[in-house]
Structure formats: C-alpha cells, structure tokens
Image (cartoon, rainbow, N blue to C red; front, side, top):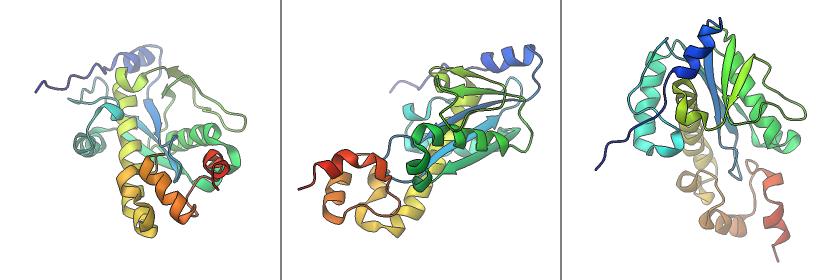
Length: 213
C-alpha cells in the first residue's frame, strides 16, 4: 500500500510572516453540507516552520488517521480554538453566514490573538457575518497549508464526535453516528419514518418536505 503523501506546507504562513504578521492562523469549517446538527470551525496557529507528517485535508484522511492527528495538532499548536453554530441559527441566518460566524468565533477564541488568518475556500463573508481578522482566502487551502489542514481536522473530528457522542444518543432512531447527518439513503429513510427532530436544519429539508406524500 502506498504511503499517504501530503502536499501541505508552511509556505503560505511563512509568506505572511515575511509581510510582518507575527501570529498567523489557519481556519476551516466542517459540516456545511449535512441535513442536521451544527457547523463547526477551527483555527490553529502552528509553530514557525512546523511540519506534521501526514497532515492533509481532513476529507482525504481516514477517520483513524484524523483521530490520531487531532491529538498531535493540539499538542504541537501554539494555539487552537474550535467553535460552532447550531442548526437553529443556521436556519435563521443561512449556512454561508453560519460558516463565516463560526470561523470568526474560532479565530477570536484563540489563546493568542491572530493578526492574520489563512481561510480555506473563496468566501470570506455572507450578508450578515464576515471574517474580520486580516486574512487571505485560499482555494483548496486544506491541501496546501499546514495550518488550514490542521484546522480542517480539528473541525471535522470535533463535529463528528459531537454528532456521535451527543446527538446520536439523544436521537438514536436516526442512526446519526453512521452517516454524520449527510443526506444518505439511510438518513432520508429515517426522516421518512420519524420526521425531523429539533437538531435538523429545516431549511435543508425543503426538497424532502416537498416530496412527501
């Protein structure tokens, strides 16, 4: 079996430091697509030049690898923070605003104030919330930036743990631990049988509602 090779590096962080920024964080979110539960975001400041073997976009890694890296990232980070916005608020402000709010909350929660942020993707604002810390958006950032990749793993693992350890136990009939809230065949079958619960995002269920007999 070939060894997983990550292309993520510290080049973007080093470039920001060269511009005079002292505390450069990476920020990313997880859980924008599921039909239920909160969207999570994380922000991570890694030591200068830090390289963590195997660190990559969380979506490219197995659950076992993400779990292992989760602890390593927290041990090595200069600072890290995780934040979330729940399903009720997602319905109120929409998922883009919720993503932006969660990312800024994560950045604001860092024990050391970040003076620059590397943001995964090409969006830095919605209609109500925006990333206010000086920043750069990086398309595919979780594959090229060590700190964004680290943030993607903290966000993904934190959300998965919350879904499995909390929501799955509160609402066992939906089998959330199996599909993490994504719109799988099983999840829709459970919705057909039980209807939505309080942690479902009602604005994400419009097509399903429209198709009900």
